[in-house]
Amino acid sequence: MWFLYVVGGIAILIAIYYYIILPIQRKKIVKEKLSQFFVFNEYKGKNYNYTIEKENTILYIKLLCIPHNSTVTINSKDTWQLSWGGSTAKPGRVYPRQKYLDEMKPFLRQNILKENNDENKKVRKVILIYKKTEKVLRYLNESELDIVSVSDSPYGYKVAQFAKIDEEIDKLFL
Image (cartoon, rainbow, N blue to C red; front, side, top):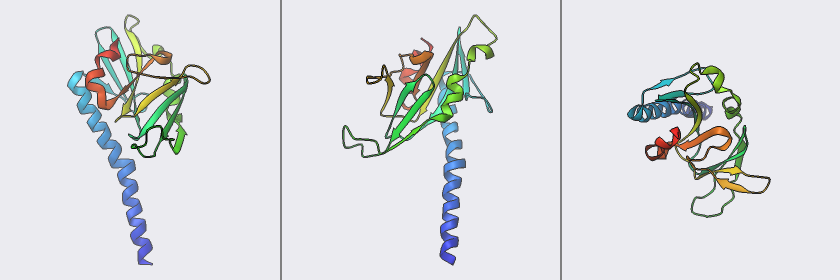
């Protein structure tokens, strides 16, 4: 019987770490990194996490936390798919786990222009992938895929990786 209590206690501790402590640590790391570059605003209860203003551009940033051995596929304007798992030592491997990123739909569907009061400023949606992914792909048609870089704007938004934010931050404003 005591074994069940020990296993239950360990399961509760693991759940607390993954669902409470780890997200707090991630947000702290992102805040520290973004504050090196710009003054930003943090939002709770919105479809986006941060906004950054620079000259005549406002970036609305959504933070997406995913495993590092993964790939993100943009299927359509508001449908994203995450594939992850498998050994990184095997090139051309099949990712054993996949899921649709339904938590991204409200942000991708949201009309940010309605929230922006200043019509003179350019508005851009940015998805910041934390920490990194192997690649971000986008379907061009039913069978062709293209690799998305930070300089691309599929469907009007930018996709950046947090691990490369030092070299990619200026490209987000272009």
